[in-house]
Length: 423
Image 1 (tube, rainbow, N blue to C red):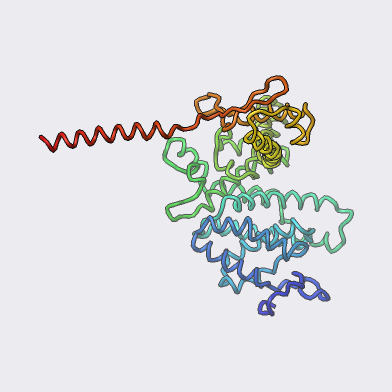
Image 2: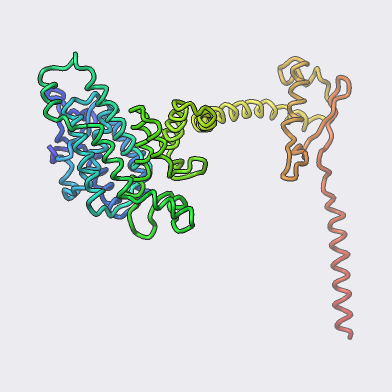
């Protein structure tokens, strides 16, 4: 139960292994999470909310709920003052986690639809005085469309359905209805006045894109950003329905040739360009489709492969520098040394050593901000036949000359002072 003993590390989120999953069991980490999340939402701390949503929720899921749902909303409601809006948000995450980790039942699919309906009704007709991260708001729209698509695929497989499931489908025939999905997305677009906001922004009367959709005057970004992302959701739904003309019409208020709020979330960016390009492709507008697909393919490669590529290059560079550090040590010891002797010290053959020496020359040079090649070597060398001759790259500072110049300056100053005294 909610007031059970502290969570035991040996115990899974299923509670007692003999009784299976207990929806009323709330681990201490979940209690802390919902209490802290609730407080941050009330305080409109978008940064902290984003950290908890993106990091804390995932880490707790991996630790306790890899193959089980989170505690039920009824079990955690008492820790958040039974706040209606927070409970709707919690259930939205709860169902998204369920879809990602498990196979939802028909009843759970219907319950998720009801929760989205209730959540969107609050946003459309209630007073939502909170700021939520763009990532979360995008995920709401994205998951809403995904669950609609998943339900359509589930409902199409009638041969595998039991009589009880068929009866439930008939009883809740409005759940995930295509008109209901379209109506909610369209209602969010219209209620948010996002089309007018984007038009006013072109005239310099709004700062929607410049602030990534957030309201820094103490208001709420939820309805505006949900309306914005709903245009992308409508594009996706119409593409699923094969109505490509209408899909492109829905996305028209967003100038996808420019950076916008849709580019602030990776999933939103990819979904927008993919479905925009696909709709143009199906309408045989090949030039437009190719141009947008090229953009997103480049973007995906840069985002997904950049880390691995940079790591590979960095490790390769470190490996080379480790080898070069040994060369530098020997060059600092000798003024001349034969290739054969240096190769034996380095435990490589003479051909490999010559390659290493040339690599050292290359690695110790760079191009400065003026486009000129400069040397970073404190020890230089050249090869004459089979001998390596070492020379100092940087001339040693002549400290004696420096002090002599300063002494002369000092004497001049003292002479001037004496002259002033005499006068």
